[in-house]
Image (cartoon, rainbow, N blue to C red; front, top):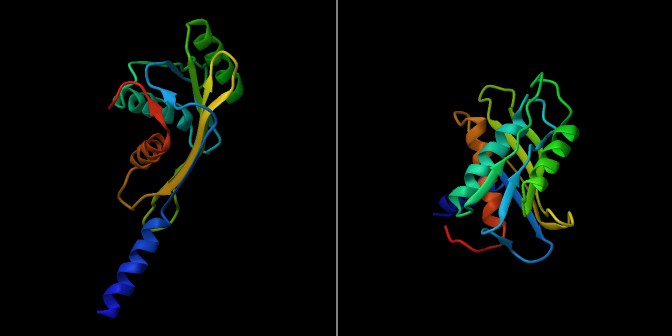
Length: 176
């Protein structure tokens, strides 16, 4: 019986170590009835276009949670493998403000890859920042990371991190 409890405890400790989330609310909860502009997430990973992939997933998840006005701003690029993250984010932010967005959603993809080794587990790290479009003040920010299982795709791991981050975000407005 003691062996079962030790095994259960070790299993729970192992599973808890696979994912980490942290968030901070700066003001009022995020209003899902707002007009959201999701701009390219800064890609600090070594995977090309990881920021665009995460932004695309994020915009779909916001809609799934009840946000009806979500626009994805991904400026065109001559070479999608080499681009200036900051320049693309500035261009998208200006376009979003011009079109009347209330909340600008930005952030960074810190990791978006498969770990080396026999299993090749996916590893994802993402930071999100929701800002008021009028005064650029932070409404909410959060960061999360996780490693997945050997047969899990990196996009699945990214989806889970984004979902868990949004679960941490306090919201008002349209319900799921």
